[in-house]
Amino acid sequence: MVGRALLIGRRLHPSNQGFGQWCRENSFGDMARSHRADAMWLAENWDAVWAVVTADYNAVAHPTHVRQAYREATKVAAEGEAKPVPFTKEDADYAMKLHRLAEDKCNANESGVARAKLEKLGEDHGMTCEDQAAWT
Image 1 (cartoon, rainbow, N blue to C red):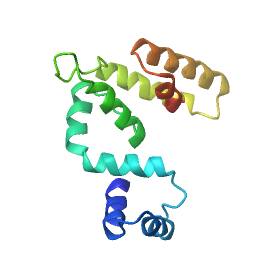
Image 2: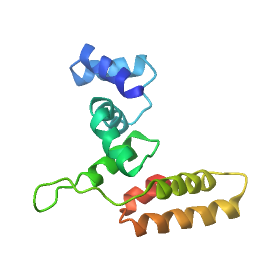
Image 3: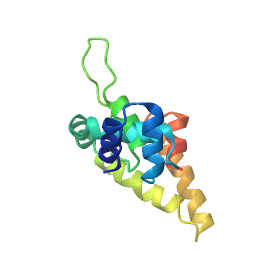
């Protein structure tokens, strides 16, 4: 996992400058800082994230998306209890299928339709524009 490798580099090099140099030397230099931070966060919080993700099967491939899904699923209710966002396994499977179709560069028409359906699915489940942009 990328996050684990980055955590090793961070532990070896606690200064930002040293860590940045380590990232460049180990093929992480072209990775955005925010993506590195999200990957490290995911590695550190994997057990808690996996419990939430599998509860509603809101699995998304990119660490940033998983982190956002985790934030949404654990929003604190007025009583202080975690309140998961309703997103079923079927919804997640459908979203992943739409995402694959939206990324298909060989079929522009089908790709556009899939992207529109994916945006609608996101809106139906209260996803922000940023969340939806990450899907397409």
